[in-house]
Image (cartoon, chains in turn green, blue):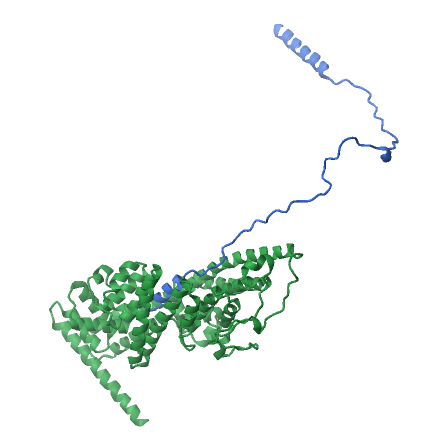
Length: 481
Length: 87
């Protein structure tokens, strides 16, 4: 233990000295170099010393003034993209970025254009990334999505397949745990996309087989339950669709809430001609989500001008969090699981660490003061960005509730109409048998497990539930089933 | 004097026309039937029966309003959101 502590101390001293040395080298260039490449050289020294966020303004200024990117600068930009994400070339306009065809800039520009829904241009820019480059996996995922959105499914499937293969290869070759996880995430994303295209093409069985490749411990797994439920719904296995959506009610998945899951449950009951069950789900939807939507709207309205409120909620101590509406607490938990949020949060921490390191430097001068000022504004920017991200998540969640309220309203009208017909035609129909579930009504493939549900959820059973309800469709309602 | 005469004549003519329009006073006496017997048994209706013997209403086919229930035609929303959440 003693040796370990000494080694750690020595390592941090060496690191600190190295950072000092590179900061000094950067300062020398800042003072003495009068060439056009001054900013590029300063950025290189800073990147070398681990001052990634401090290097951003210098790289941006250099690229703004010059059109030349040599091998060293290309490496530096790539490092910046890996370490700081989209922040690397944040201040540069798209027209300027278009002139450069290096993979790191193409990836950032492609992502930016994709988010602006300029799909064809984004596809063209992303195609500049060579297939052998490590960024090509992300590029293929995005290109596949573009073709998917344009309903060019054959092309989309090819791109997703390339993405899956390359991600799997990189996953096996990766040394670090973080890097491995990143490639696993990309591989699973590409598999899920392939399965979704299959659903869109009505090849539901093929889609369900693909979903089996996603590990239950995966970060993506809770999200695929919805996809699988839809595939089963279209296969008319309504019992399994309900079984999948009901999985979200398990305590392990309590922070995941999908209003769409409620709609799908109600629709499945509807298709089994279980009008009362379906009506119960519809009524529960309004009772459950209406106050939640109101609470969220209230919190958004009160803090819409704040740049830090939602970020502070994330950092709040457990006592403050306990006082929050449990729903808002869960929504923040769900947001925390998003990759972008984690990356931005890591960036914020890294930028703060960097600022602390610069503040510790002994010789203060114009250069270090400039670095501090830049870092301060970078930290403020990242904080506002994360705050905006949480706000946007809450906003889109409210929108989703409203969207599905409309679906539920239509379903309720349809249900009331069915119930009215049932009353009118009581003489025609045989007596409705309301016997509940039976194993005989469960459709099961050889690869699917079967568990009895005894009132408690078990982690290994999650995702394999199926209801065993008998369809009550008779006579005029036969078309439902 | 001339004016006085004209005014007197005008007033006199109004007086005559007012007397013409006054309703005649008549002594009207209303009398009500004290007792009447209707013998329903001896009543008779002459003519042909043209109404159908069986009263039925033709069954109409009920208008079916098909409301659009939620369909999942694509995953565009999820796919776009996942890319947005990547970086």
